[in-house]
Image (cartoon, rainbow, N blue to C red):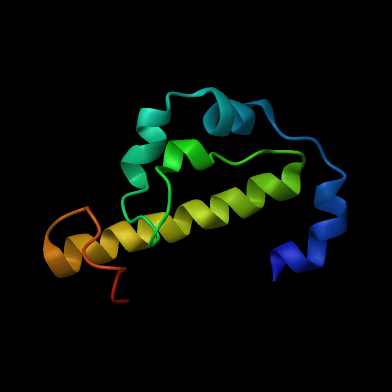
Amino acid sequence: GFLNDYEEKLKGMPVPDIARKYYERDDPFMFDQFCTVKEPGGEPFSRQRPKLESLYDVFVNVRNDEKEHWKTLCNLVQFDDMQGFGTGVQS
């Protein structure tokens, strides 16, 4: 995939300011709003905000964000609720 094919190049590129703003400086309340399905035994999402060292990290975090959106969508469809039920989402 893209991350594997371009890993070396992306790791040599800087983090865009907008990504740093979103992942490191914006209000963690909004970050927690879309991360609605916690992993079993996981911490609140605002405590696990990602560290960004390169553009590669930005792409990894966008991928992970999309996973969170998918889990939220599954909960909305299956349970008519954004919050996680039980130990995970049935997808």
